[in-house]
Image (cartoon, rainbow, N blue to C red; front, top):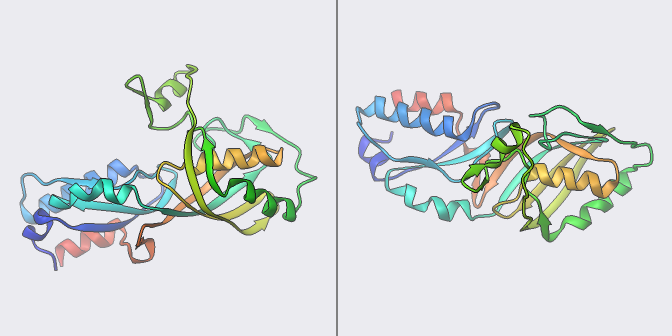
Length: 230
């Protein structure tokens, strides 16, 4: 069982983020629970890489002096699994917003889907979603988007190490991606749809790995809280 001094000197906690929670909410919850469990007035807690509220999976949480390692963890290769839905797009590239366009899909074969992944291996240019937390002129992009304001977004170079189609069920395409820091899987879904000529959006997303850390060894928030009280 970890002690007060353990958390203050620094721990790396692996948490399986639940659906609809923000990464910030997870950090705040864990900080509050640690403070309550050990009667600590102040403790540093941070995460090594944001997950969208509609995504689940691995959050690497650092406490105390280990928060100095956050930048190192953030820079490591990440693995995701999830589902693209072909034939329709949304402004946010996922289910945060409603479908705004639909496209024909009758010409799309399983072979074409698998073959299209080859276009996205290696270094690629990617535009971040307008519904993202990236800042422009000191303001987060999603605030521009929700206000209906157009804003110029510059592409960035990201690296896709692996892009595998794991299952196809009609218009639902399951995938696994291994990629660099800064890769938006929502943007990959949108770009993949464009490459197919049909449009696509992200319907589910789960982060399974960050470097050598795996979600298979992560705890739920509830299990972590129980461990503090054991």
